Image 1 (tube, helix red, strand yellow):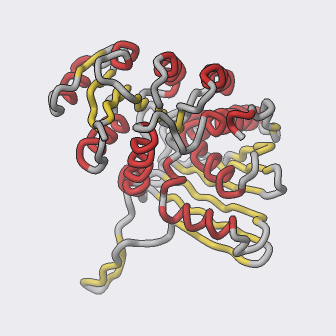
Image 2: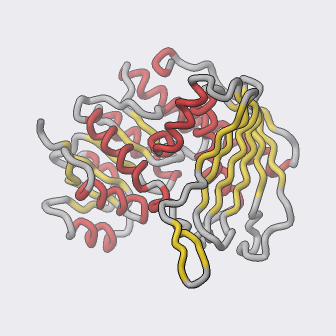
Image 3: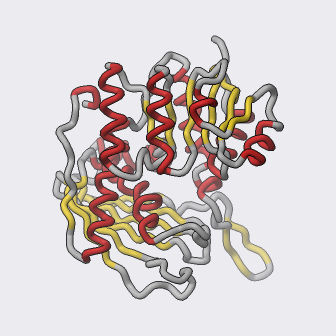
Length: 336
C-alpha cells in the first residue's frame, strides 16, 4: 500500500500535535504540505519534516503535489473554505471541530458532498475514539442500565487561553459534549438552556465562566454540562449516565496512585492532548486507513452540522436567558 500524503492546514498547537502524531504514531501516512498564515511558524515546522512544502495559503497546500488527503486544524472561521477546496479536488478531509462556526456553513459543505455523491468529510470529535467513551456507548446500546434518563457531564480546563471568549465556552468546548451526547444516546438535541453563576474570580475580565448548559433530546433524556475553563486544577472530563435500572461513570480513573511521605494521590492531566492522547491516535489511524481507500468512516458532516446548530441555539439561550429550540433541516439520505 502506498503512503498517504497529507496536507495539514493550521500549524498551531493542534496542528503541530497532529504533525507529530503522523510522524511518530500513525503508519501509512506522511505530511507532504503545511499551511499557516504565520510564515515563520509554518516554515519552522516544515523544516522538521522530510520534503514537506510550506505555504501561507491553504488552497496552495491542498493543491500541492503528492496530497492525497487533508487535515484541517486552523481556527473555525477558516474551516469552510479549506473543506470546500479539498472537496473540489475529491480529497478526504479530517476537520477539527467545529466543522464551521455556524450551521449555514456546514449546510454548504453538506451540499458540496451531496453533489459528489459520497462522504469525504470527517469531523474531529475524538471522544468517540476514547476507550472509556466506547465502553459507555456499548453499555448504553446493550441496554445495560435501561433507558437513559440523564447524562451528567463535567468539562474543566486549568486555564483558558488569552483569546477565549464567553461564546467559545459553548462553540469550542461544550460542542464536545453535544456530539458525545448525540452519539451516546443516538438522539438529536432539541433545545438548549444556559445558566450562568457569578463568574469565577479566576476568569479573565468579561469571561462568563463557569456555565451550566442543559440539553434536551429527542428521546426525552436530559443532559447537563458544567463547563469551567479556569478551574485551576487541571483538565477534567467526566460523564455519568443514569438509566432506569442503573448508572455508569467514566472519567474518574487514575493511571497511577502514589502513597509517599504521609500522603497519597495521582496526577491530573493539564491538557486535552494528554487526557485524550490515545483517542487522537486511534482517530487518526482510523481516518488514514479509510482515506487511503478514498473514504471516511467517522463523525460526518451531518454530525458537524447538528453540533453547530446546537451551539447556535446555546448562544441564543446564553444571551437571552431563555430556553432556545434547536432547528435542524431534514437529514439527507447521504447521512442516514
